[in-house]
Image (tube, rainbow, N blue to C red; front, side, top):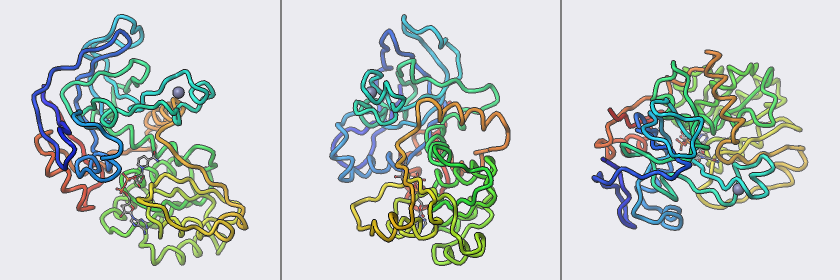
Length: 342
Ligand code: NAD
Ligand code: ZN
């Protein structure tokens, strides 16, 4: 089968012919039909410090996908050949303290497909049946193929927050931020304000229903106007950029909540006393998707018809187009980029 492989500890991917994976008794083989490309894949492509410290080539890249089940292991009972599925890409142990207390998203034994084991930028992938998630018949494979980042957005927007009636600020309108805008609108936020430095992405945020989509320089005045100087109830920090993180704390109201998804590239200084403590702010750190309450919520929002992620997908490529895919993501001109396999 064709697979996009990280062959050695150096920049680049190679499109290779590799064996179709064999499956264990508790696994299923999935024929990949669509696969989302993520910033993580770009880090692995570029072979930056994070990738060099974490990944062990050679392996097949990619962790966001959907497809059809082609084969099931002997112990698998609730997935069958032909099922249309996506999957949670974090494979957890199921036995540790965290897994057993409903916190599998922070299982210390997590192994991620396309990072720690072979991934989905290939014609087939083997997955534990426990990680498989069935798609409704009306969900196209390319939407199935972006459930992973959409799930990041659902987790960030809805875990521990009270979005109905709330004023919400989304800092950073990458694909996940734009999903989050649509989710908060669907969940009944009274006002959704989005910020980004990139006009193309602000336009996508507006398309997903943002009431205000503004440059960082205009954010403070916009929040003041929208909240009569109070500040927003909830901030979803989805950029990882220090300037935006400071703004998140500056624009949330006292007693409000900041959900932190964006990952800063290196440590930086925050004044805990003035930015967080004296303002009584609650912070929630987001890792992946909660297993599986986030997946249930995501499926129910899609069923409701009130949340449509389709506008976020702006580019589609065959696997052969990986160079162009990397380029378009780095240019900042894309929403979500997906590989389509026929
Ligand atoms: P992305 O890099 O496409 O989006 C980040 C956005 O922030 C970009 O559109 C960028 O223009 C914008 N930005 C830059 N400076 C800004 C500023 N000063 N104010 C507002 N916006 C600014 O990334 P993405 O794929 O949407 O992911 C968002 C973040 O979440 C990234 O940091 C990513 O690493 C992180 N992430 C975290 C998890 C997790 O589990 N915690 C999972 C996936 C991604
Ligand atoms: Zn565990």
